[in-house]
Image (cartoon, rainbow, N blue to C red; front, top):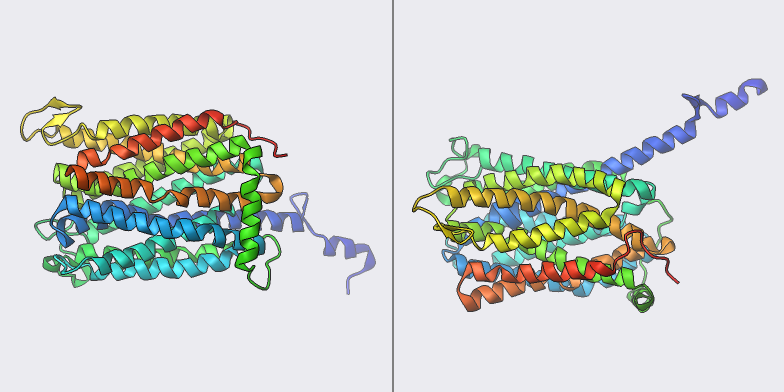
Length: 468
C-alpha cells in the first residue's frame, strides 16, 4: 500500500502537466475518430467499384449486351432499393435513436453488405436472367446505405461543433483514398480488357479465367473482403458514448417519436428547407455517380479499364477537395461550400450531355478525335471534386441545424429525407431513358433535381436556427 504522502500522486498521475485520465480520454477520442473514419475507407468501394466504375459498366456491356436496356433496369433496381430504404429507414432510425443501439444495426447491415457484394461473382457474361443478379446487388446496396446512416449519426459525438466540419471532410477524403486504392488494385490485378489482360498487361492473378470475365467478376468478392478487413478498427475503437438500452425500442414507440419530430418541422423552416434541399441534390449526385459508368460505356464506348482510369481521376480530386472542403467548412461554415458545389454540379450535368464521340459542347469534332474523351475526363474530375466537398459539408450542415438534445434524432430524419426520394433519380433516369431511347436525354432529370436543391438552400440559415 503506498505511503499517504505519495498516495495522491500515485492515484492521480499526470502526463505533460495534465491528469492521466484526461490524457487517456483524449487518446480514446482520437481512436474513436480514426475508427469512425475507417468506415468511409471500408465502405467506399461499394460506390466506387460496384455502383460506378467496374460492376455497372460490366453489367451493361457483358451481362447484358444492350446499354440502354441495362441503364433502364439498373435504374429501376436502385430505385426499388431506395424505396425499401425510404419506408424502413424512419422506423429503424428512430428505434436506434431511442435505444442507442447503433452498433448493433451497423453489424446487421454489414452482413447484408458483404453477402450482397460477394454474390456478384455469379454475374456471368450473357446471363440467361439478370434479376437474381440485380436482387443480390440491391441487398448489398441496402446494407451499405443503412450502415452509412447509423455511422453518420455518430458524427456529433466526435468533437466540438467547430471541428465537426474538419472531421467530416477528412473522413470523406479517407473514403475516397480507399476507393482509389481499391480501384487501382482491381484495374492492375484483376479486371481484364478486351485482350484479356489488366491495365498493366498481365493476366488476372490467382488464375482467374479472363475468357469467363472472372477477373472483373471478382470485384464483388473483392469489395466484400475489403469491407471485412478495414472495418476491424471501427469495431475495435468505436464504442457507445451513452447508455445503451438492453432491449429494442418497440416500433410503435419509435413511430411516435418520429411523429413528434415531424410535427416540429413547421416551426423550423430552415431545417425543413435543408432536408428538402439535401433530399434533391443528394439524389441527383447519387444518380450522377451511379450512371456515370453506364453512360460512358454506352455513349463513348469506353471499356471497363477506361472507366476505371476515369474513376481514379474523379476519386483523387474527390479526396483532395473533400479535405479542402472540410477546411473551408471550418473557416466559413458549410453552407457556402454546399451552394458552390451544387451550382458547379448543375452546370457539369448539362455539359455532360453535350459530349459524344462526334461533339464536344455541341461543337462537331473530327472523327476519331480524342477530344471527347479528354473532355469527359475533365468533367469527371470536376464531378469528383465538387461531390466530395458537397457530401462532407452536408453532414456538418445538419449538425448546425438540429436541436442540441435531439442530435441523433435529427440524423435519423436526415436519413429519412435522403431515402424518402432516393428512388426519384434512378427511376426517372430509367423511365426517361426507356421512353426516349437515348442515354443522353435520360440524364436530364439530374439537372432538375440539382436546381430544386439549389433554390431550397435560400431558406437555410448558415448558422442554424433555434428551435422553439
